[in-house]
Amino acid sequence: MSKYAHGPLDFSGLKTIPIHARGGKVRVEDFAQPYTGGGVSDFLQSLPRILAADSFRAVVDRVVNARAKRKMILWGLGGHVIKCGLAPVLTDLMRRGFATGFVLNGASAIHDFEIAIAGHTSEDVEAVLPDGRFGAAEETGREMNEALNGADPKHGFGEALGRRLEKIADPRFAGSSLLCEAYRNSTPVTVHVAIGTDTPHTHPAAQGAAIGRASHHDFRLLCSLVREMNEGGVYLNVGSAVVLPEVFLKAVSVVRNLGNPLANFTTVNFDFLQHYRPKVNVVERPHAGSGGKGYSITGHHEIMIPLLAAALIESK
Image (cartoon, rainbow, N blue to C red; front, side):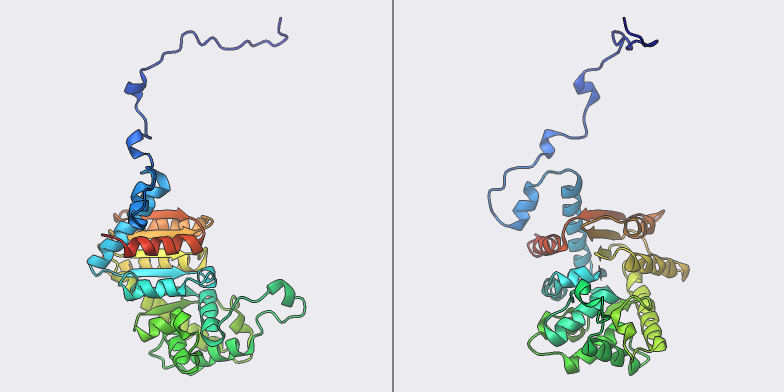
C-alpha cells in the first residue's frame, strides 16, 4: 500500500484519434535531400523546407526581387562584421546591385577606417586597458575627427570619412575598405554614433558639435533611404544589437510621420545571438499593420554572409 493519499490517474478512458486525421507540421516531402553537387543554389535547394532553412531561402528570394525591382537594399553593419573581413564580400554585392546603401555604427566605421589606413584593426583591449592605452591610436582619432571637423555641412559622417580616405588611405589596403569602395562607387554610407561609445571621441581633436552634426545629417539621410524601401525594399541588420535597431525603427517612424507610404518591405536580422532590440525593432515592429515580413537568421557572420552572397550571385 502506498502512503500517498492520491493514486495514479486511470488512463483507460482516454480517447485517441488516427494519426492521419491528426496530421503533422513536419512532412517527409519537406525533408532535406543529399547534396549531389552543382553549386550553392543546388545546395540551398537540398536543405529541408523547415524553419531557418526555409527562412534563408526566402531572404535570398526577397533580396533578388528587390534588386530586380530596383528597390533599396540597405545593409546595417555592426563592428564585428568588418572585423571578420567581410568588406570585400559586401563591396562585391554593392557592385552587383545587391547593396544600394550601408548603415554603420561607430565601431564598424572605426574598424573599416583603420583597415584603409593601416591594413589592420582590433586592438587587444585586455592588454592595453590597464594603463589607459585602449583607444589611443593617434592616426585613427586624429584623422577621423579631422574628417568631421572640416566637413562641408552638406556632407554627413559617412561621406566625410570617404572623402578623407580618398586622400589618406594606403593604396595597398583601400580596396579592402568598405568606406573607400562605397565612396568611389557613390553608394551612400550613413554612420550613427552615441557620444562616448567610440574611441575617437577620447582624442583631443574630437569636437562634439561636429560629431553630432554629422551623425544627425546621416540619420536624416537614412530616413531618405528608408523611404525608398516601400513596396519591395530590404533592410538587413547584421551584427548590431542596440544602436542600429533603434536608429532604424526611428527612421521608419519618421518616414511614415511625414506622410510617405512605407509598407510591404522585408527586414532581416543576422547575428550569432538573437537579441531583444533587433527582434522587436527590426524583425517585428516595422511590419505591424503594414504587411511585409521579418526574418531572424542565427549564425556566425564569417560563414552566413559569404553564404548569402554566394546564393545571391548564383540566383537564377
